[in-house]
Image 1 (cartoon, one colour):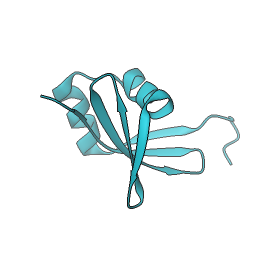
Image 2 (cartoon, rainbow, N blue to C red):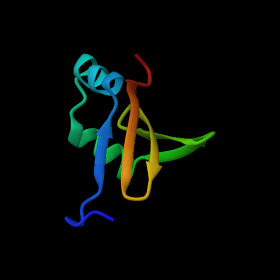
Image 3 (tube, rainbow, N blue to C red):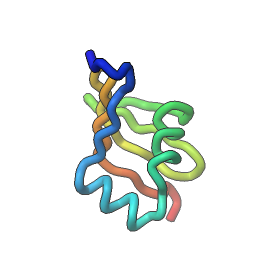
Length: 73
């Protein structure tokens, strides 16, 4: 457990590159994780929010972002 009481957000290098390429900022990715519609695919979670999807793995208080992309572009 982290002493700061905050969960960590860890995007992969690929996810960081896709954030820049698609123009989706970190705060929108966090909105997708916390507010978006979710479905599971094996050990990953796909969250859909405002026309884009975020694929991530959730571990206790840690979110490892795998990729982000626009759903219909």
